[in-house]
Length: 311
Ligand code: FAD
Image 1 (spheres, rainbow, N blue to C red):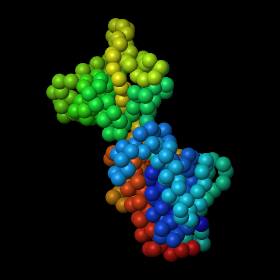
Image 2 (cartoon, rainbow, N blue to C red):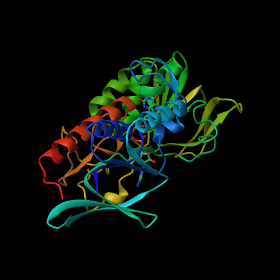
Image 3 (tube, rainbow, N blue to C red):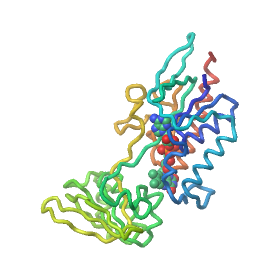
Image 4 (spheres, protein in one colour):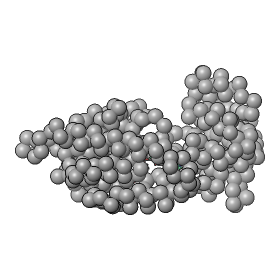
C-alpha cells in the first residue's frame, strides 16, 4: 500500500505530495485534473514571492515540482469512495476509483477542492475572466475605480460588496430574494456605504458585453416583470462555493455546507484521513492557504504513520 495517498492535484494536493515525498515515504496522487481550479484562472498576483503568473503556468509548475520527487501521479482518475478496512489486523484505507480500480494506503489526504456555483445566464460563460469573476480577493484590484455588480445577498455576497466598495468606483448588489440573507451586522455596514446600490427581488437574466468584455447586466424586477440594464465593467458571482465532497458522504464528517470538518492539524473524523484546501472547513479559499494546508496535512499524516505499526 501507499504510505500517503493524496486525492486531488490542486495546490493543496501538490503541496501535500511534495511534503510527504520529502519524508521518503511511498506517496501517490490521484486526480481528475492535475492543477485544479488554477487551470481556469488567468492572472494570479497574490501568491507571495511570485509577483505575477498565469493559471496554466502555475499548474504546470505545481506538476513539475511534484515530479521532482518520487511520487506516483495517477491523473484523469476520479475517486468515488473511501472505505476504511483492515489487513491482517492493521488499519488500511481504500480509495475506490470510478474506473473500477482501487488503491490502498496507510493514510489518505483529501484535497478535492471546490467549484463556484454558476448562475447560468447568457454571458456568464462567454465573459468568464473578461469581466465575470468569482473571487473578490483575487480579482477585486482588477476593477479599481470601475463599476461592478455582486450577484448574491448572502454573507459571501455582502462581504464581497463591502470589500469591493473600498476598491472599485461603484457596487450594485443584486439579490433574487425579497431580502438580503447576510448577517445583520454586515447588512448595516453595507447600507452605510455611499457607493453601493442594492436591488432585492431582482433576477439577473443576462450579463452583456461587446464580445471582448463585460459592459452591463440585465435584471428583472420580480414584482413588475420589468427589465433593467445596469452599465458596468465587472460582475462578481457570489451564490456559493460547492466543495467536491459528495463522494465522502457517510464516511467522513462534513459541515452543513458539505465541507470536510478538519481540526488545526488537518485531521478529519476518520483516523488516518486528513484533508486540506478548499474542500475543508478552513476559512478563506485561496491558493496560498490551500498550499499551506496541504503541507500541514502531509506533516500530520507523517506524524500519524510514525505512531502506527506498519503492515
Ligand atoms: P482545487 O484547485 O479545486 O483542486 C482540486 C483537485 O481535486 C483537482 O485536481 C481536481 O481535479 C481533483 N478532484 C476533485 N474531485 C475529485 C475526485 N472525486 N477524485 C479525484 N480527484 C478529484 N486563488 C488565489 O489565491 N488567487 C487567485 O488569483 C485565484 N483566482 C481564481 C480564479 C478562478 C477563476 C477560480 C475558480 C479560483 C481562483 N482562486 C484563486 C482560488 C484557488 O484556485 C483555490 O483556492 C485553490 O485552487 C484551491 O486549491 P485546492 O487544491 O484545495 O483545490
